Image (tube, rainbow, N blue to C red; front, side, top):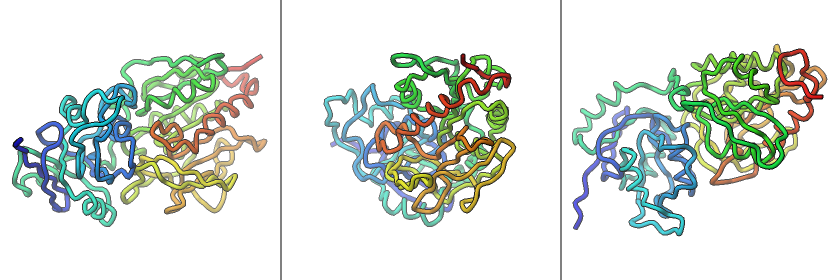
Length: 387
């Protein structure tokens, strides 16, 4: 029989779980969060928004379809650690190239299996997301907890620059090029520029610290800001870039972290949720149409904007466009110009959701509509003008 290495999980409040090593052996620390998706674990692992987080999968059986080379959302696994109840003994998919355990080991991701993830998830729901340590080299819970308490918290963490692209790159439009979009990479997922390219957008993906002048030098029809990790209250650079873009009436679309940056640019605050939204089954209502969408989420912070009224800002009238039906958290913002026309918008969830659902894919079409409506109206403001 194969000898299995014991592993230990200790939360910052002292709650302890024992299991077996899964993936790389060693020790890791991060914020403990849970993800409720029944599928899409490969997309979860490679989502840069999970940087410095230890992900607990609530689905009890993980690894069934192995790992392929087509579905990653970035060039590497970003989670700080991985917690599962029962790992698949062998993958079963014609697309699989290797097992999940092999991929975790190859990328030096420390995990633990055999954990009562239901009990762990209930604890996080009741007590809130908190720091955690996972170790297959430490056997003393108190010794591990001391190191957990010495690890950095997520509040105040400025992480976008750590996951952003090292060099700018271009995703060409599929078919005829209709628009040029600059995408500020705060932790962008592979599928996001693809969704824009499918709609005729040539996407220039640039670093998170790119200044406004460099953005405008690309002569864009629109600005996009992506998902990403960390505390939005620390991300001052992108906020200033967005304020400059809004002053020039450059159309804007933001997703997830981009929604929080948009909120700050409009003058709203942000705050940390108790345990966040992470999964692919979150009900969100579009307040403009009344339609309810099932959506994919991954966020631990939210925008503090009024639900009962619009707000006048330096750039026009802003309002909450989408709301989560589970807890009334702001899930989208819309900005209208003096003529009442939509000029910029964002959502807190993921309309690109490669693993599904795809209820919100229309938002990329909405971005195209906003750019089309603005053509020729920005002349003299330092952004692209069309004949």
